Image (cartoon, rainbow, N blue to C red; front, side, top):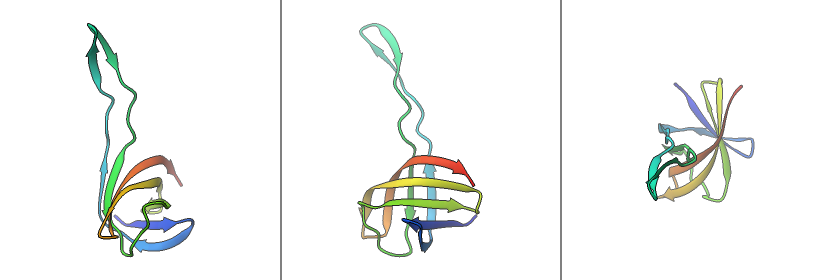
Length: 91
């Protein structure tokens, strides 16, 4: 599978170690009642080929079939990125 990172439509390069974390909704007991919290945003982690800025909005294209619009939440050593998946759509 090939994952390509784009920043504002400009190709940065192919990324490594892509991991998508699907976070489910959580059921809790509050004051004796069972409630379900809204589903949190999915997260992803990857290694960028070039340094990235945490403030940017990026997109990742998987095998030219699926596009993930992501927002970086944590960047370590300018290339190890943890991001929230804002949107997932088929191309």
